[in-house]
Amino acid sequence: MTGKDADNDVTQEAPESVEENQAQAPEEGNAELDALIAEAVSAALAEQQDSVLRAQAEVQNMRRRCEIDVEKAHKFALEKFSAELLTVIDNLERAWKPWRVPTMKPSMPCVRGWS
Image 1 (cartoon, one colour):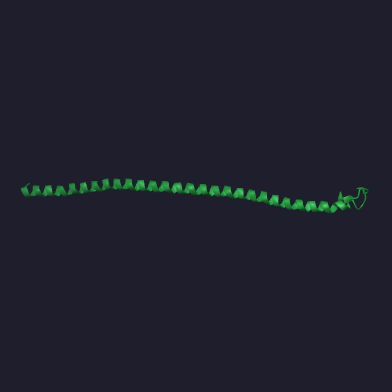
Image 2 (image 1 turned 90 degrees about the vertical axis):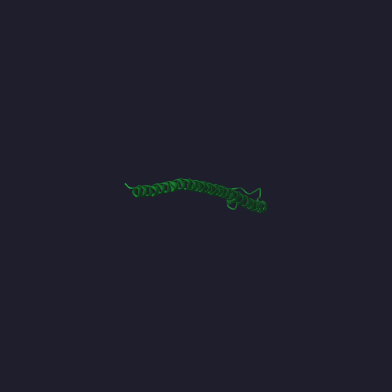
């Protein structure tokens, strides 16, 4: 080999080593980038999971509140109905009092259904 050939060999080797160094540098950069992406994804995933859990809890609370409201509605509707029914019963009893005659017996046809 002449001096020029030796220089060519060195120059030919240099670009290969530069290419190898450049190939390794992006891999290191990719590793860092991958780590950052993985961290961002895991943070977003945790945030979404938290959001889903909160939504589920809100739905469960709403369902429980609705059940309680329905129970109260039934209870107060029954109370209102029984209060209205009490006044009707009281009025019927007051209306029936004058018709009760001590001499009437339950066997009499006009008293059978009214005891």
